[in-house]
Amino acid sequence: MTLPPKPKSRPRNVSLLQHAKLFRKDVLSAQPEHLYGAWMAEFRTPFFRSYMVNQPELVKTVLAESLTTFPKSTRIRDGLASLLGNSLFLSSGEDWAHQRRIVDPAFEGGRLREVFPKMWDSAVAAVDRLEGQIEAGPIEVESITSHVAADVIFRTLFSLPITDETAAGVFDEFKDYQRSMPFANMSSLLPRFKWLPGFASKRSKETAKVIRGLIRKLTSERRVAIDAGTAPDDLATKIMTTPDPETGKCFDTEEMVDQVAIFFLAGHETSASALAWSLYMLALYPEWQEKVATEALEMIDPETAYFSAVSKLRISRDVFRETMRLYPPVPATVREAACPVKFRNRDIKKGSQVILSAWHLHRHTKIWDRPDEFDPTRFHTKDGKQCMRDAYIPFSAGPRVCPGSGFAMLEGPLILSMLVRAYRFELVKERPAVPIAHLTLRSKDGIWLKVIKRA
Image (tube, rainbow, N blue to C red):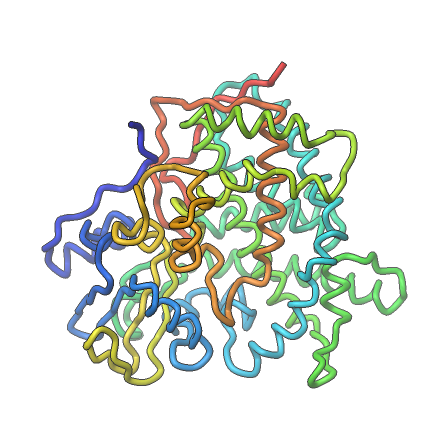
């Protein structure tokens, strides 16, 4: 049986220096195989300790107490602040609560129905755009999915297609930011000595400044339109005009720049990753691709955008969901113990890192049946449903659960179905995909597929 690609694990016992070198090269393959069956593992350095937690009850505890006992790791927060400012992803305490009270209403069910036509337009544009590229040979599909995911963000947020000059500028700069931003380096393994290189490279900081400048231009223009009463009824207008029900305050321009930056990082990067790996899975398992294509041909009228069609894309949704189990867009989350706690009879000191690895949790040998196999039907079984409740966190969980999870589960299956309805995707055997952790889970040398237009 052909299994989905998975990095080869390192030997169990290596020196700290060897592990640091492997970790810097690729976080996933730097981990030993036994972590796929461990409930908890401890990693020691001369300076601090990290704990990977895989036991579902403990994972739920960490996520449930993510605002108090286990806040975001300062090492990760410091590295991303140049782009994300004090956005939802990095903020804590009352700042975070204030932001969620304003942002959450924009992603409620009724709003998703309203933004659906813009998602549809992005999907149609992606199908049309791809037709002009298939004659050149195999296509690197991460670039395709990145483009359409960015288009969705700009259409739904600012009513602008990706062809808009400023939107295109943000997209281009963000591609540079992704390449220049390491997932981790020595500063994430050691205390914050001033002589160590920071998590963010000089180039990533420069790119972040440009991105924030372009986003500031968009938000400033929207503020003028809101004041003039001419702003379109999209997500940006909704968020910028929603007062905090407790304080009565709305986001100012800089606060909105922070939120747009995380919407782009979380909404664009994660969706692009999940879509690209979904297409690779369908190329690897053509029988599932034909099921998705048949469903899409039956349920989607390409000339008419209607919201109810998405609820009928059950096979596409199962494929997308199973792909995110095998290839969670955010492969790990790092928390920091704000006070001493005890897990599995181990004392975890204040300041220790607590790592929740969706990558390992989703493939855990003591939780999932056939964890390394691609099986979109698994979530319809009794055991599969239980596993999904206990050990499936592509959008995190608890109070810091991603507010855009419903948005992503609307966008992903729709775009996947539209693409597979129009084209057939085949493997390029000499260019296999190799998972590697950047800001999101991507392929080391891209995901290359042959794309053929369906008759």
